[in-house]
Image 1 (cartoon, rainbow, N blue to C red):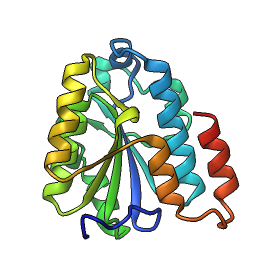
Image 2: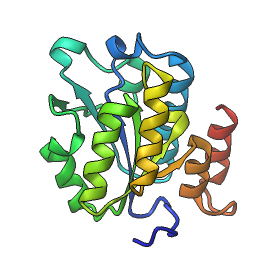
Image 3: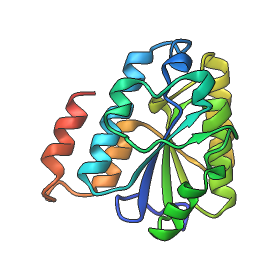
Length: 184
């Protein structure tokens, strides 16, 4: 993929990383983060994009927070920080001819960064909406996004990702996507 190629719904997917209550309790602005990620999940589903989720060591960190768990039912457990260690995730990427992955969740400087770097190394384009990822500390979040951008990830926002996925205002799903965005 060219670095200037738009990241539309075709050949794209959304990965929701480790939005577990025990981790979220430490995240400032937890509720706006959950709202943006929920909006992105609903938007991706509206546009027919695959959505995956993961849970970091749920035996110790507990399950995914309820609002996200209601939207993403299959959330394989992992102990590796990057999600590419989850075999069924990679199988889905290759099996569906996915070219780009939008990564959302927590924490930006750990699981998000390591997943994005692995995906880039595997040849995928990666998008990270800055307002749909978080870390406990703003400095960690900021430097993670800087690093990801420098290594080739597209750093965007939830709204810009949703509109880019949609492409056109005359497609049938536009009104629903527009309503999702208005709710942000």
